[in-house]
Amino acid sequence: MAENNPGMSRRRLRRASDETNAVRRFPPSTDFICNTLPTTTDRNCGGNGRALCCLQPAEQPHTNTPMKSIFLVNSISGQGHLDAYARLYSRAFLELGHRVILVAATDGGTSEYLTRSNVDQSRFSFVSFSATPPEIRVEEDVTRARLSAIERARLVWKEESAIGILRRLIVVPRRIARRFVPESARGGWRKLKQTTASQLARIPGARVLRQFLFPDAGRIMFSALLRCVQKAVTIAGGKPPDLVFFLYLDLMAEGPANVVALDTIGGWPWAGIRFHPRLRESSDARIERYFESRTARGGVFLVPDAADLYAKAVPRLKFLLVPDVADLELASELPPVAQQIRERAAGRTIILQIGTIAPHKGIMTLLDVIAKADPQRFFFALVGEVYWQSFGNNEPQLRNFYAQAPENVLTHDGYMADERDYNSLVAACDVIYAVYSGFNSSSNSLTKAAGLQRPILATRNSLMGERILAHGIGLASDNDATEILAALEQLAIGKADAFRFNSYADQHSLAQLKSVLAEGLPLWLAGPEKPDSPVPTNQSGMRSGPP
View (tube, rainbow, N blue to C red):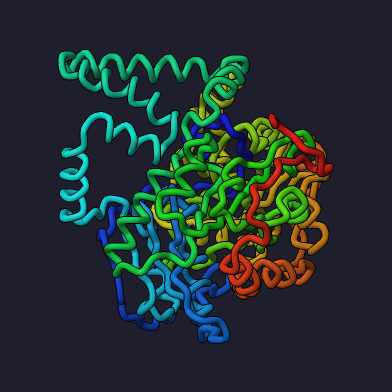
């Protein structure tokens, strides 16, 4: 998963899963998909040497726990392979015997994936964010329209506290004033703001100031998602959630209004995934504020030791370590970009850098590696959207490289259309390049490497590097071009049976995810151990933040 911090914009947060955002937006799906009968699909996944058939048959649901209604909220559906978490967690909860209602902008291919996996979908529903029943929308509009200004203010105060009142004092006059401004002028103003924001984003001091003044800028409000859940409850039959599970807590705002929203809009118990737990990143950090809501039940992490840190900070909540699962399904045919890579490589060892092309991926060091490598022996492929402006002073050099790439390099600036194509591209290459800079979190690129049986090279003294060496699925190196090239040469001559791919794949499998969720769900449903609010603490257990 990619690096994250409270001031990061939503654009940068799209790399919140570090392993490669390789898929562009899916076509809009049906607003409501329910009770789709499953079929069985057999897929032959040959033709790529060591690639495996990764579409596994569904397991029978566990029946030792009464069926619960899990509302799975995906706040960034349509953002490429990040939809894999919606697919995999939906399948896990379904195979544990529960009802799953996926609430998102699109289903991200979840229904089709469940069908191909032969999972019974009689307990699965998808409700789009835009699927508001007309009768609900009319009822809400009429009810609010009948309220006086004071009554509306009271309602806003109840739902959003003082922050909501202050926001209305700005938003409402601005909304009225906009009616008198021509559309052409508004369009020019929007363009100016975008250009200015883009320029300021290059200045470190401006980013720090923005984060200090507007910590929730670019983040997603819980109130918006919870209202979508409210609508989904009505559409899906009226039964309230036993648990709301947020897939991307890293993207969520933490202001006081959000804690209020969690406790007042529905008031349902909730948990979620935090990919980059703050307490693990700094001993002086304060716990994420949304964990202070009374409806919070806990969460899951992908990095070791985080669960213990958070359990110490908030004893009433339940936190667990989950495997970093990945969607490993292959396409029936090799995607065009993979075919092009193979044809141009012409038997040379293919080194693949896939996903968001950004500084934290160690791209500039990779250019040095390419310059040192024997072009008769190695072929490099850089596949993923390039975030040019994030490279700062190195942007001109990178643009020149892409414009005049060497013969032994293929560049593809953009996303792939389907994650199955993404996986097939990985399987078509020989070594996965993941020597990142300043990244010490989990990445399911390791799970893909193990599942698709492709050795991977990552950074030494990082979590990825430690896991690679511990399980024998590749090598680790410092961010030095000469050392990296030596490691690539070693991996290029390694035989498939020299790697212990199955060890890592088993540890980060869907079966392991289900095992952890089966343990956590009863704890979350049981409620917090103590009714009082938690005291924010740092890693040492000392109180942190304002009293």
